[in-house]
Image (cartoon, rainbow, N blue to C red):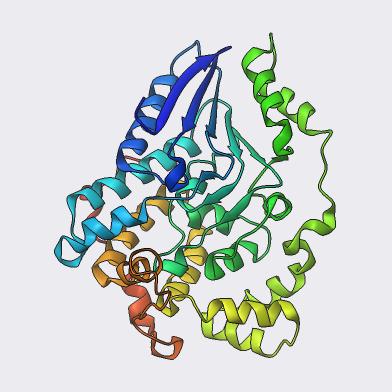
Length: 361
């Protein structure tokens, strides 16, 4: 238990409550360590049959990693070479892997904002995940807006969305709703926010319940209209445009489409880092053939290169520090992004035997 992570157990359910509301539960290194230590202990604890992770605030489940922390420690060291940054990403990605491979039901109440690192602590593996969204859910992997890429295993879970939905979400950083999350396979159940206390009470007080069955039965009475999913409505266009091999080709395809969706998407992409949109596209394409462990190892090298390049520092400066919303991207245009620049983000940052995530299976 830490100041911002509260741990409890009841009815053989282990509860992790994120409680950093002023920062929308942005993850600090200490929060990551507390969650990791708790989950490791519960893995082999016969008295814990499931894990519930939730927020103390209705505004956000978790808005991601603490990007102001990234900026402060990165700015204090040349080329972002901070030991604290190294520890943060190594330990965060190890936690993401632990959650993907968790041996017990893992229930994530994704109420409110769920972005970046928040997705990393919610997207468990198929055998354990019970991902619940509400009408307040605002989900995204928005890293291209700050000069980063969809990390925390984003390459893995985005590349496994139907069609080109994951490519679209990663390259544009767009925010989606509960209906979209369900359609994209990034959530499992919809429960109205007003019903979450009742759901929680059932889990923590119900006698002899099988957790997965109980949640399925509880959520079965709540529906979202199919037309509520923007992704479903625009699926044909998304699959056509985002199947292109390069970001310039995606832009060209969108420019030939005068639909509101295409024109809105063009406007969104004009604000993102040209370089990191290209890197993200390559990341998602490569991730299709990789295991979650290999995706996280690849992303760990990528994030090292990202801080060395400095694009993320400029993105966070513009969004969070100076708040001028005018990042000076490098390169400034897609035309100036070269294949060698993109390839550099996938070059090994360590020899295999020294990679900080070499032990992930």
